[in-house]
Length: 168
Figure 1 (cartoon, rainbow, N blue to C red):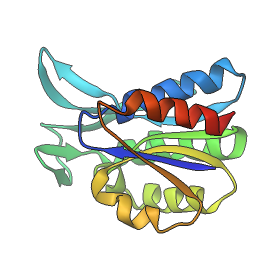
Figure 2: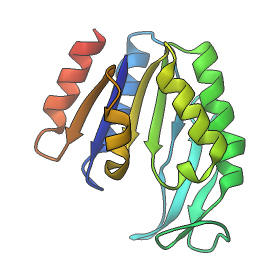
Figure 3: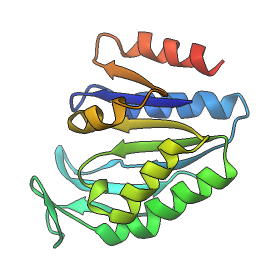
């Protein structure tokens, strides 16, 4: 099963992915993968981390002061993606029942290794639950085995219940 969640920034994609992960863990299903929480300084967003949800290993994915490929105001650390995200996803693909990816977006896709692994995951028999940047959905939704959910603040609870029903 491949579940893709998309929507505008702030629509609740990451929150929904976390709720689904919690449900899977509560029902004794193994999960692995990555999350990308914001780095905040007061009320200001300064960047993003990338975190291996199984080991807790983390690195700065993007920040205002990083030198590297740019996505908007942020410099991206391709090394962080390759050193934290890629091993976390590969291990999850080999060991876990569900692979969680929050999120597949331009920052993460600066890594060729990450891009290749995402393609491999979506072509495999592994269950994937991923938040995907809305600008990238067209290329993924062409696949016949994708269940696509477009989230917004009004429908996010309904979508959560629908996904939980799918997962059983």
